[in-house]
Image (cartoon, rainbow, N blue to C red; front, top):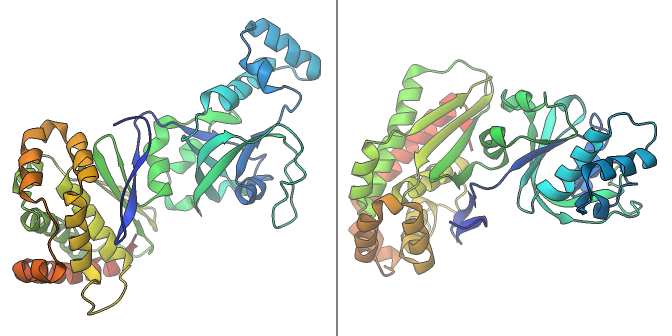
Amino acid sequence: MNSEKHMIKLSAIPEIPIISENTKVWFIKTSAGKHYKDFLDGKFIAIEWDKIPPKIVKSKQSKEHKLNYIKKQYPKEKNTNNILGQLERFFLEIKSGDYVLIPSKGKTKIAIGIVNNLIHCGDSKKDKNKNGGKCPYKIKRRVKWLKETEASFDIYLYKIFCVSHSVSDITKYSQTVFRNSTPLYIKNDQVNLTLTRTTDEPLSLCDSIKFYSSILSIKELVAQLFKFNDFYEFELDNKIEIKTVINSPGLIEIIQSSSPVAVATALIIYKILSNKYPGKGESYSGVPALIKSISDLFNDKTNRDYIRAQTENLNARTKRIIEENRGNVELADWNEKNKEKIKTLAELQIILQKAAEDMGIEV
C-alpha cells in the first residue's frame, strides 16, 4: 500500500477507510474548550504565537537563532523552547492526511478529523462560528471533521487528555482515536469493526454467546458464498480479536486479519446492525443486495488488486480464487443458486439482531 488513504467503495455498501501505517494522530488543545466550537464550526485547528511567521520556523537557521527571535517577539514568555516545539509540530510535523482530536470544555466531548494544508496566517475575522464566537488565533490548518462523540463512551480517551503540550503527537493512542472516528476501517492488514453498547444493563452470557456465535457462522457462510474456503480455513488459525471498552455504555471492537472474507463479514455485520436497507421485499434490498454488491466488488479489477495487496501472504491462493469468481452475475440468478445459503444468512441476521438488541449493541 502507498502512503495515501484509500476507500473500498460501491454504491450499495459503505465506504471503508484504509488508513496508512504512516498516518499520525495529533491532540490539539482548545484553551480549555473555549475555542472548541470555533474549531468545529470553522473546520480548522489553530495555535497562538501569531507573531512567529512560518518562514522562521521552516528556515535552516540554528535553533538558537529561532529561540532568540521568539524571545524578541514574546519577551515575557520564559519557555521559548516549548513555543518553538509547538510551532515545529504544527508547521512541519503534522502532515496532510493525519488525524486530529480536540476536546470540548470539561472534556465531555471530542471531535476527530483529518488535517489538510495550512489555511493562512492572516486575519481571523471570517472565522466566526454560528454561535457568535471567534477564535483570535491566525495560524490555522484546514480540517475535515469526521465525528463528534461523547468522551465517556471510551474510557481510554481520558489517557489522551493527560498530555501536557498544546500540540501533542498521540499516535500511540491511534487505535482509540480511529475506533471513535468510524465504525469500520482497515489498518495494518486488519479489518476493525467497532460496535456501540448503549445500555447500562448487565451483559447476559446467553446473549453474548448467541451474538458472537452468529458472527462466526456468518463468516463461515460468507466463505462458502464467495468460494473463499481457503481464506476461511487459513483464518481459523488466526483468532478474531475482541476488545471491549464496556463502561456502561461502551464499545466492542471486532478485529480480523484483512482478507476478502473478513471484509465481507464486517460489511454484512455493519449493514445488519445499522439497519441501513433501502426497503423490504425488493430485489435489491437487504442482505442479498449487499452480498451481490460484495460479489461485484471482488470481481472489479481495481479491488482485486487491492485484495491481492492486502493479502500478500496468501497471494497464490488469492489469484486462483479471484480468477474463479470473475464476471458479474445477475442478482436473480445468483440468488436462485444460493437461496439456501441466503436463507441461512437471513436466519443468522435475525439471531444477530435480536442478540444485539438484547445486549444494547448498535453500530
